[in-house]
Length: 138
Image (cartoon, rainbow, N blue to C red):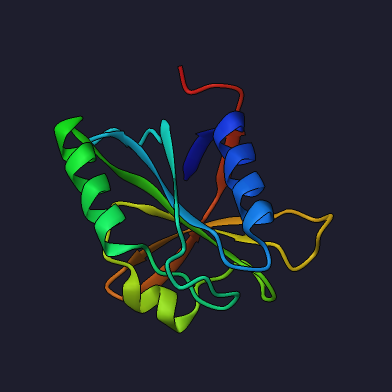
């Protein structure tokens, strides 16, 4: 199960809506081994595409150095789908490299609706998991 704070949930949804019609992407870091998504990092979609996202390699390297220095890891890797459901595509599955991360997808295909789903992706296997939004993780 993914448990995250309302503020983090709201920030991910807002980022997805703001970047529409392009896919949004980012990471929520937390203390290594904790499974606590605490620090949101919006990333630039280097592909600037409505059908594909790509982290900028330089930004991603900088993020991993920063997380390493803070003894953090990516707890959530998120991105949006602009015209399809919030479910990992074949490309998303092939790019999933963090076996401990929650892969969150937000669909912005319906402007008024929120479709927010979380998955574990390990060795190409996709497993949907429940999402619990709480006031705070403190």
